Amino acid sequence: MWISAGLAGAEKERRANLFFAFDNGVGRGKWMPQEQARTLKELGYDGIGYTGTKNLLERFKACDSQGLRVFSLYLPCHPGNEVPFSPQLAEAVKQLEGTGTMLWLTVQGRSSDMEAVRVIREISDIAGRHGIKVALYPHHGFYVATARDAVRLVKQVGRPNVGVSINLCHELRAGNVDRLGEIIEEAAPHLFLVSINGADREGGWDKLIRTLDQGEFDVPGFLRKLAAVGYTGPVGLQCYNLKGDQRENLEISMKAWRNHLSSDDRSRGQLQVPEK
Image 1 (cartoon, rainbow, N blue to C red):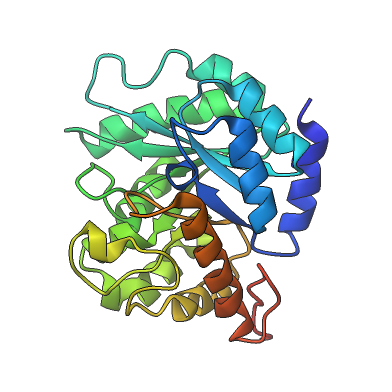
Image 2 (cartoon, rainbow, N blue to C red; image 1 turned 180 degrees about the vertical axis):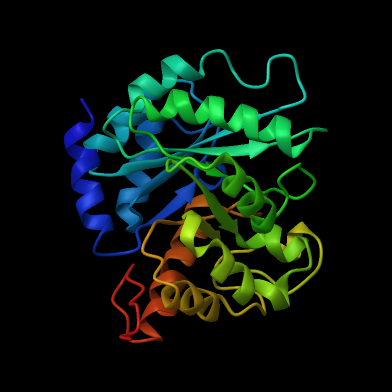
């Protein structure tokens, strides 16, 4: 049902960094999928990153009707638990085949690299049977808290469908603001997804997650560093706990995204790789 849209999106992705919004900024738990998709289409986004595996059919139908993609499904695993991930995962992954949607996987709880690698490989096998990629999602306070944690595990996992993401706000929360260039270079060979937002260089979440037009952190410079290592994958907009009207926040951030790109003489959504 969704294969044609997924393939079309994959073709477009080879030409440009597509820009999508996290569902936490698009009425998660309040807006119906049709309203989410319609809003994102009207504002110029390329799609959405969803949380969990509920209502997949409705979500995908709504996005497909607007020519949008579901870029990711945000899911947890707890390697130290007796049941480390949802038993519904295998059935959900079957529905993702041909869509290009990635599993965006947090690794949580008290664990060890050995146990985490075992669980990630199990998830990798389930996803791989349907051509699905798994991107580790670094999150402050979790077992995988930074992109460097993710790279360490991905190298041990050793599966081509398992990669990493760089989540700007969580790297800033970890105090990595002055190491981001090094982190991007280390993550580049394994990089599947990136998330951004407006932010100051340090502070609490209210300072580290803002609309894309706000904050002292140099987001265009961060995008240039991604371009320099050849990253051409999707870029997601983190919207967690933003105050104000969600549609207005999305509109403001889209304008900032376009301004960030045009400031470097790049077309909308495209991070050019410098010639060597």
